Image (cartoon, rainbow, N blue to C red; front, side):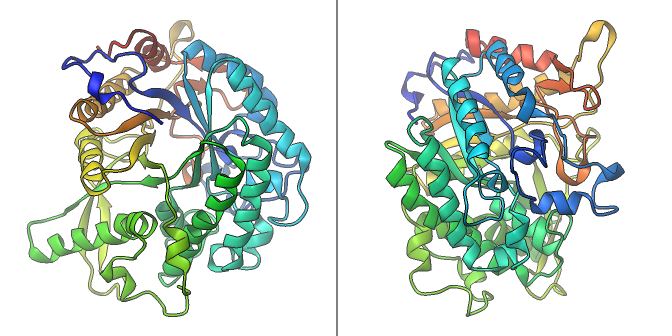
Length: 453
């Protein structure tokens, strides 16, 4: 991806081509068709159907029915003027058992989707893994099982061999840190495991999968632009106590540094390495994990506060949400300064990499109002502020290639079900009726005119 920070004026006007403007989704959150077209079960199919796992017992069996309504959704993307669309491929739709035979019907779906995007002038941007691990692999241990990384590389080969002639922008993994902590340590996401010791194997094997997948990506995709979408929060001490200041540093090391340093510099930070079980990292692993990439994907949503927790033998800290008078539907604080912090920090620490904001958005309790209008003015304000700091960083010389709103559609938001609404397009999940929100029209105007006001 190219940038145009040298052309940026000092105003909020956006010159043509300065950024690739897009929106993002993920397979389990929108596709539905859980038992259609030869798709195998994923860990989220199993987890979401466990009593109490998801609010109101909701699940992604139908979600936004995008598998059937993809052409209508492409028409909405065109209406919004999107220049790019970031979607994820469902591993169990390609390899129903996680390995072995290929389900060509699943590949056919993404083939049609990619062709439809290109016919409308929308750049397809694919993510190989957005948390929907095939259930058959979880039965062997999932990301705790080293062989899962090897099967991920086989899956990457299957997908890129079919789509790599047209799709040039790839994220191997989406938010491996969140997937590790929420799914393998806290147990609030699939697969629902709750042991701190799981952190290291789940983290390392995902990163190994990323490195192994780079080989088929480079072989099958000419001029590939490849990276990982990291979830990056600004972490600050909860108090001015020295213990909490140290906890904030440690939290940043485990949540961010472990993933960034392993993939971009080929080592784990000392605080992580010293507690990593000796049998997890094998000789040569970090050379594989740190194979060169082209893009740092930034998924940014919130700020966290860290407190010392000495009884947590492994981590030594806890994090908590910032209390605010205007929390989002997820309970998160609106904090655009945190995005500015990360864009500038990444430019400073990894100056050779292009940065793409692969997710940024706000969950709100949107409702369809009079005359069929969803007047989500708070989302407009949120996007204006966060895009504003992105453009300020671009003007200051940060190499930024694109910005993707989360999300195109109101979708299944994991353990929160369908309550939080993140979409530029509202979805009635009973009728599947789509309604472009005020924020969608605002974003379309921004893309078309380059005017942030």
